[in-house]
Length: 133
Image (cartoon, rainbow, N blue to C red; front, side, top):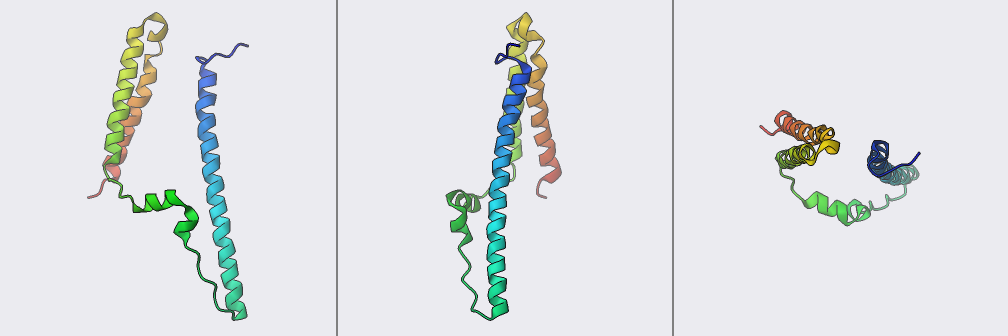
């Protein structure tokens, strides 16, 4: 079996493989943070039981690093789904048109661009359902 970059199985494994690796990394980071908070809680509870003055709480923002500080100070525009939807829909339409116009080999693959179109429409729907009043 000869696997090429155009093989659909390779593409699916490539995309979902990276997504899986990303999700595992996020899960591990959250687990480490939860373990750290659990250790701090146990330490404070033992100190309270023994009547020892409570240790100072660590600065959680410093523990999270620069990314967390930047994210906490950044104000997110509530209309972000509309911008992402416009880009995703445009890319999907463009991809469909290009695949349709390329010729016989690619003409059968033009519905792939509809993934972007429907993802953009889904983001529009998400904005309509969750927009601030």
